[in-house]
View 1 (cartoon, rainbow, N blue to C red):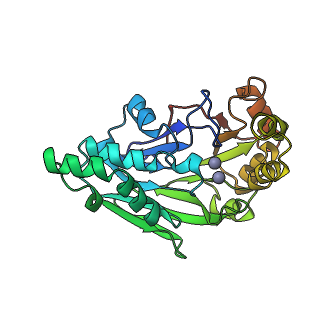
View 2: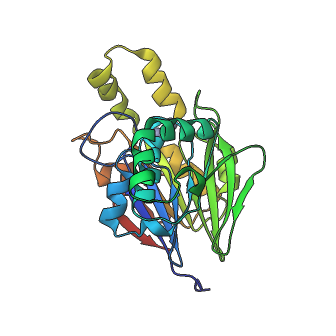
View 3: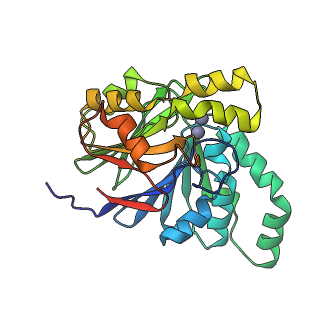
Length: 289
Ligand SMILES: [Zn+2]
Ligand SMILES: [Zn+2]
């Protein structure tokens, strides 16, 4: 059945992790439904990626943060501030785990000098009151409007607890974002028969190089990477068991490796365990629903 609403997924940033690199922007995605924009995660560079994608930031209805690791929220405040400064009339709903309210207020305090000046001398509307920050609690159903119904699921991501996956229902289409997670049986249920599963992916062959580049010999860091994420073959298993129609790989770890961050390597690592269509995500890629 064709969608009555024109819907599109835009991968704004696909690089997983906090290091500095040029290869990919940090994690962020946009879902555009009938002109309305929903953002999932807001890593470093999200505003410039939105601009490059030609997405109207005044049409942002809600932002969904999967968890508060910096690669997912580094430009959360920047996104809110520059969206306000670009004329968004509000409101914007911001969903995510605690302490998202505290983080939002801290950012507003951090930028208070600028915000106050612009309200006072440029007659801009109030900034804080256009934001509606909702910390996710025990209820899986978190948002519904005329375009989308959104549910969340707690996923295992090492010590980063809670971390969430999100499922968007748009008419009869289902799109699921894994967020950062190790292999999750719960996610298999949650993503059952999804039209698109956007899943993070780890190539274990790249872990040693990350440790060597940053903190040589740091075994805690190595364990964090290995235990908190989903390997290529596991991603395929999750997609197969969930019987998803299309698998979109995202949040690539390692990002920017001249040897490993190559489409064929990601594809070959996953296709042994998932026989359906696989999209190796790239920044600014647009996927019609
Ligand atoms: Zn991450
Ligand atoms: Zn994370």
